[in-house]
Image 1 (cartoon, one colour):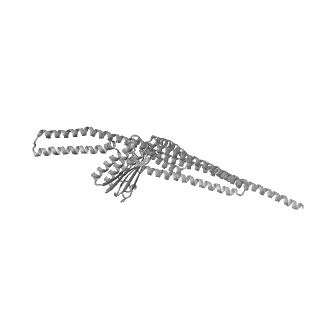
Image 2: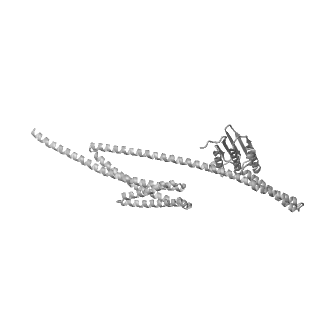
Image 3: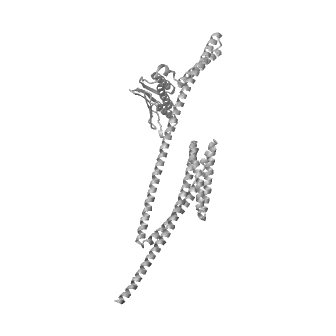
Length: 453
């Protein structure tokens, strides 16, 4: 028994020594894994900061280019605010990256190339902005259309991606060292459990941060979209008001010019015609040559008076004010048919419209007939005006060669003017045409004035 006891004591001692050694090994493994993991995580954090700094630099360069191009294309000084902010932040980003890569020769050399390309890009943008401010249109457009800026941006992206890839590789290596440490830590259940919980906690924290950052980014993007939509609506409304004003000014100028031609030129031509008549009566019997000359002069004056009358009617139709819309459209259609040789059939109902809308209907038919005479090569045209309880429908249809609306024929400029005129009056204009199938222009105008927006 004593021998057994004496034998058991060494086994206990050995077991205790082995347990101590195992504990020491576990503690050593744990400490080694802990130290390696700590250093790897520090490197991951450093590489992550470097990668984020390069991403930030690249984003600031893109923001500066976007702001400068926005200012160049629109001339709006508000685009200079993000441009100036991005330019100021680029210098900070470069300083931070120089400090980070101060002890790394390869990364520092690549950073030097990146810095040179960034500075060239900034100089190119600064030159374009200054020339735009100075009103040197040709110079900044030339700079904008060259490939220098694109080459610099391609070089910046390439070098930035190399730095980012280097940081990513460092992160991957550090992650591999962490993995090795975790594999060593599997020798101890506690270490494995602690490492698993730590990794799970870090994962949850990172996921929460990413989710929060994504929500903030989405909110910022939505705010920018809303702001852009508001600006687009405001610009569209302003342009529409300007176009309407220019159209009104044009009609006023037409009326003024028509009155001037009627009062001044008409009086001069009529006086000249009367003078010729008096001269002819005073001369008595004249030689045939003199009579022919006087007759030719009288006919020339009559032609001038007729031309003056046609010009006045085109500028400001007196028939519209004196005879009404239906008679004015009948006269317009008849005169067009006589000039062009195109048969025009009219179906005109008496409608009640104010003076402005009557002029709108007249201009629509006038412009439509003008387009038919210039482009359609038609043989027959139908002009109709129909009145309903709360709106009026105007239609001009021809059997000409038609055109493709998507190809933008020369007549589409006139169509755009008609469309704006109709929409300014609160109506809508529709155009239907196909090559070889003629053209149909229809306008619907309300009888009452639209409520101002």
